Image (cartoon, rainbow, N blue to C red):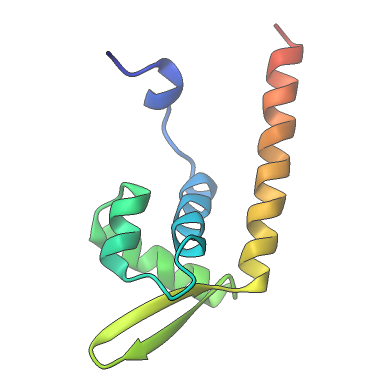
Length: 99
């Protein structure tokens, strides 16, 4: 089976941020950067600066335990995901209305 055209579409930065937050949300104990990288389908060198950006915007927090850094979604991050899903729903609806 090949990939559909929707799957080949390039993700926007906002889409990637939402994917990263979704991965972190599924791990209430905290997510390690390798798990986030794998879950979001991005290389580590792209994920790390994005995690810093999300932390700077207050969408996630970083907790250190020994050598490990655990990422946790904040209330503001959850609010972002909710708003993102609403906008995606509207975009899907508008896309189907035009056809």
